[in-house]
Image 1 (cartoon, rainbow, N blue to C red):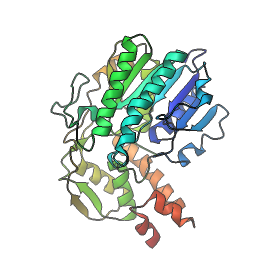
Image 2 (cartoon, helix red, strand yellow):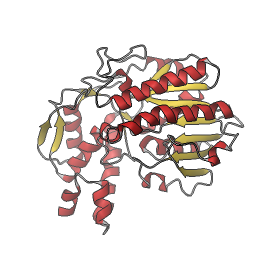
Image 3 (tube, rainbow, N blue to C red):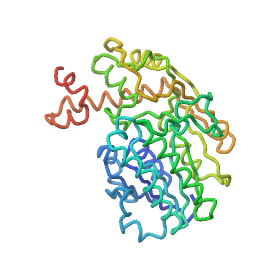
Length: 346
């Protein structure tokens, strides 16, 4: 980061990826302002950051007018927008808020970028490709999205946010970058966020039955969080001037059954595989073409799935160990509602 551009605002900075991004930016010498409504984030994600002198946390919702403490600043040089629930069970709880976060919230942050001259990065998503007919997914692919389905609040919200960001750029109102994130996993994931890695790991660690939606032949590509954060920072700091989105994800493709087998092998335990109906509009195949990221950013994932799963497994195992030794049963149930009975029984 250049002089005068070392104040960074991270919206959604208390979340899974956001908390790792805040840590990485602090380690690079930036002053970090984190804004989060804590709707889906965990307080624990910020505990290791609270003692940092260059870190400030503001609890606020970007759907609402931004806090004066942010609007008064004129030295913000970078704005990362990671604010939005990112898994279907989370963003479908309040679809109106999900849509407003992506549209109204992005508009507020873009206007802040315009006022301060800050560079703006939107974390969009592979969900803009919907249930893709093209495989792997290149940035030029326009997607196959059900614009009225239960996932539309997120899919269409992100598509609208992308359109708004590029319109600001075309009008010369802001310098923008857009990243399309594919499945990301690692420590700081919420154990009950509904993502496939956290679901399967927590079930395996407690010996519960392993839930497979559909027949398990659907595929995903899993990127470890440190690789994703590296890609986001590289994109933000790149000299890229073209108004083009950039896929960030791991191009290695696995079926959900293959993932479950790897997790069971890593944990060394697990119950029976139980199949449940596939959710509506759940993508059948998902794998990024990262040629643009490789060419423009010199970026590609480095952490193999086996290593990433080991780190993530150790994280969840420690979380469960801490909860087992805690008398705070209310907190246990709140963090692990689906597996709390299994924890209590041990």
